[in-house]
Length: 115
Image 1 (cartoon, one colour):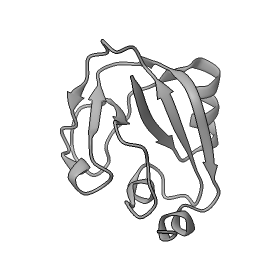
Image 2 (cartoon, helix red, strand yellow; image 1 turned 135 degrees about the vertical axis):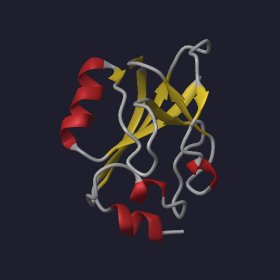
Image 3 (cartoon, one colour; image 1 turned 30 degrees about the vertical axis):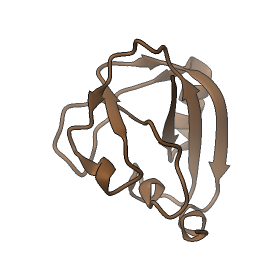
């Protein structure tokens, strides 16, 4: 199954590439349990999903990933998908992935404005 994930720190980018694993993290806008957050939709300009995810930085790395079709996924308890890119799901615990592609975005705000 193809899914999408983003990170906004070089350390997290390196960790994903080196380990082929996504680690659980907090959704800072909703007080939920710690999960791996992934999108079933590709990131697209103008959704502002990249702008609101993670650290308040200007750069981001957007991953296209392959995960096993039988990976247990749950609806995102924050319910933010309806506002930012849609189809967000979560996985409990670390998630093994195969990196298909990764795009570096040096300026998230400029990228989001190119609609």
